[in-house]
Length: 265
Length: 265
DNA sequence: CGTCGAATTGACCCCTGTCAACCAGGGTGG
DNA sequence: CCACCCTGGTTGACAGGGGTCAATTCGACG
Image (cartoon, rainbow over all chains, first blue to last red; front, side, top):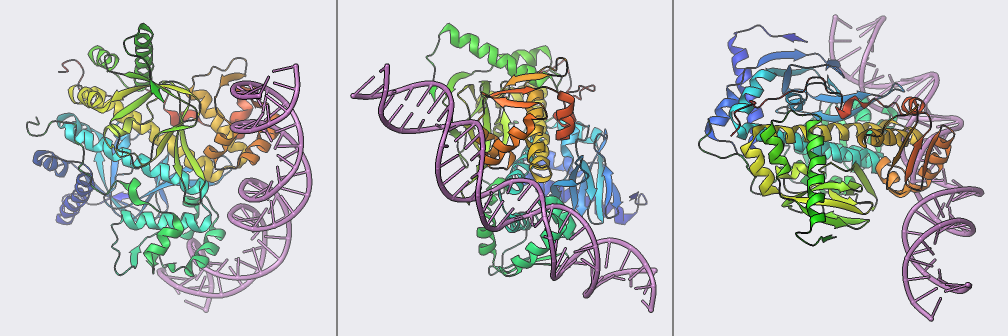
């Protein structure tokens, strides 16, 4: 967990690429004016490298920065009194796992880099200034948190009502969509740098049972080996998982915009 | 599910009381100026009565109103392909279960009145106008959705990692807090108009097992009979549930406000 | 080649689900 | 006033999905 050297050219391009990922994510669901888009890309952002399995936000911390993921996977997790942990959501490149802290700075869950990860730290002050100046940005942030909410709701359903195989299948379908993986000829492949133990923490199962379920799923054409997910028959897996991507809100049915467009400050 | 007659005095007082509940909820976590508070109380709101077990928002609906709960309990629920259902959250008086729809109108989960309920329907247009005029209101709405998110995260933990008794205990602790029930001499009592079957759908258990777990919990001083929750030993139940109310964000550690105060439009 | 984390496998059993019957209360209609 | 039903709560018997514990293998890396 260390900041990169400042002012290098590599750092500049990483910052630009990261902010562009974030902007892409926002504009996938929200309408932003040109000046608002520029304001997002102009956010200050400090590159930061997180080592695997490091908690970088702890439950109860009062944070002053958000973290924009450039690469790697970050998990929101919570400790339970009996010693076990539950992962509440995974976040991938372009996501800002703690965007909500802008408005509610006391972290109610921990954030952990499950793989090594590269993030950009963006100070709350800058995000707040952007939100205060451009109502459209505040709205986009709000909407982003709402999508996060809907994903969490689906996770409740997943751990609450599905059996082990379907849970894992559902999770891997969701991550495929969130990575923007493409279905080619009914097959999908993507990289998910997560251990089986993490999969277990995310699905409310034990690592042992995840292992067994994965080998059972292999018969249905789902492979998870070497941190790579390979799906031989996407439609079949979707059926098995009971997966309906609607909650990800990525199908753009004429996006809503509250804030007036045009004469932003 | 029917609107009340218009223009009666009873309707007026119900509207005022309901909006006041909503305002109370918002100001519990957000700072609002006098004009913003007035704007909330001036929202148009149509009283509506929901009969028990009626879905009034269906998955995939594109909604144009939000529902502010005046009395009763409303559940956010989702259907699973194998036929069972999972309740993702309960909402009580003062809550607006679908506030997020202001910014994301396609419902990704259904809303159901689990008891008979009285709500106020507030049109999106009015909420959007208020949010656009007063950035502080938009921010309060955003923050409200964030709290909803944190509650959902806790529910993932609950169904994912706790055993049956702890799950039920945790749920009943949470609802006690959200109802604002008071702990008197270590004891708490409140009314929760929910059947054991609903409890089961909310905890990822079956109705039969909820029944058995409830009778086991009786030995620990937790009683749920006739839709009334009676807790003989709050601290003991909190311990058993592993309950930490921090995620409800009700302890006001100097609330954050982004929008400038004072010269609102 | 040794080490450490992750994946894998086996044996065992307990928590929870399933199925089914039965009971209690309240509303409804005769 | 009682028969009827319907919903919700209660109980029993049984089974199965997933947890637990522990040992073994695999693979990356120094």
